[in-house]
Image 1 (cartoon, rainbow, N blue to C red):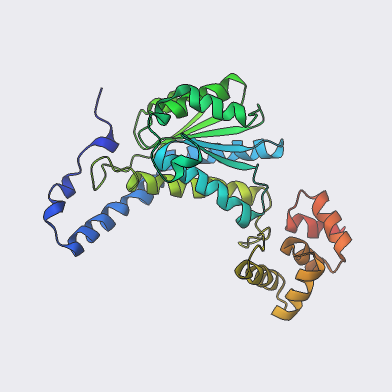
Image 2: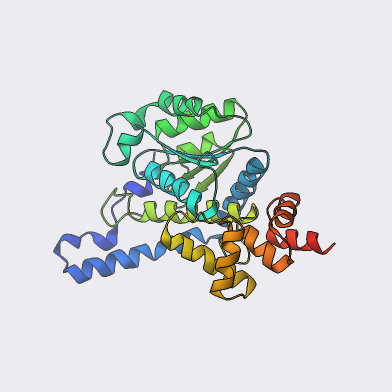
Length: 300
């Protein structure tokens, strides 16, 4: 078997220990620039497209998106899932991240956890995985047993599955309906997949969750209209979103923010549709939460 790309030595960094600080930083930056180029390859974008469309289908059926991984990959999945809640106002159940070894593994290694096929299966059983859900396995190496166990269980019960790795011909690709193999080349420090491979995973997870949420009506124009105003910064952002989407001043936006029970999406429909709270809620409910469609609905 050929050596995996993620484990190969990088010719550009063979003498990195003898470089100056600025030379090291320049080299890391040059290597990092290869990541978005690799992700932008048409065949890779086509596969990501298929995964996003399938995730959206799951959401529309009331299903959930699960990320499952170990180490850096697992942490990135949990991070992306957690950020969907304040950014898009999702229920915490809608996008979930699972990591081999559980919460403890977020900050320290849990010996042997990623080597357990049964662990991946058990963690999804505990979340009551159903055939409506989508499971995306994350493994930079593409061979993590914990991830394979989770993907195999998901397929057994009829859930759709995807795999995200950074090696060509990755083992986890054979255990999923859709496989993303983002080959970004050897790491600056050999085998340290928290670097280029981790960056690739982070970028792709951003793409998947953000695009899926846009397709679910959680963005209007380019504004995060379902943002949860859980702190002062987000309260201010919510008011500015209302102002930007409706061309009213900040004070007017603030008034409608309060009238809409702190829900920017409803406030925008109230202003642009010239309707009260109840009518805005009804219009959004009738159009699956899409503002543009709700405004058309009101013009009928």
